[in-house]
Length: 190
Image (tube, rainbow, N blue to C red; front, top):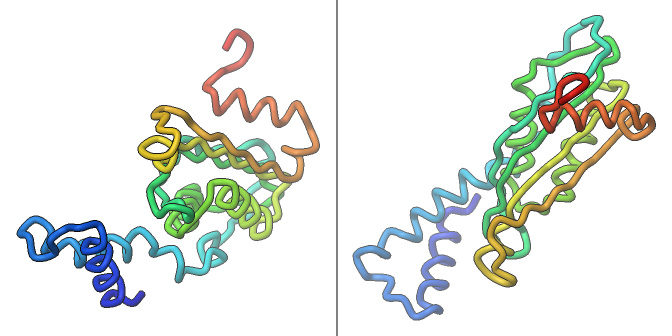
C-alpha cells in the first residue's frame, strides 16, 4: 500500500471540499486515514486459500454453523462502510477445520473494497473449494451507509444475501433446518 500517495490524496480531498488542511483538528487527518486504510483494506494482499488449513479427519456429517460473525467492510462504489453479520454453515464430508477459520475467512473478504453480493459468494466458494463438503451456506445481513447516511437516507434498512452450495441448494429440508438454526428456532415449537 502506498501510504504517501494516500496522505497526499486525502490532503487534496480536504482542500477540494474547502477545508483548511493546516487547521489543528485536520492537520493529522491524512496520516490517520492512511493508517485506517492499511487496516481496513488489509485483506487485499492475503491469499484466502491459506486460511482453511489444516483440515482434520472427523466423522461428522451434520450442519456446522458459525453464526453472527460481525464484519465491517467498505463499499467499493462510495468507499463508505457497510457492516453486519455473516452466518456460515457447512456439512462436512470427512474433513473439518477449526471454526475460528470461518471468522478469518469473513474478515479477509470484508477487508477489501467490496460489494455484499460478491463477498457472500467468495466466502461460500472458498469453503466449498477448499473443504469439499456436502454443502455450504453463507447468509449475510448488512446495513450500508451508502444508503443510510447519503442517497435515500433510510437508516435501519438491511440487505440480506445468501449463497447456497451443494446439499443446501439441492435439499429444501436441509436449507430449512439451517434457516431455523440461524433464526434461533429449536425443534418443534421454536
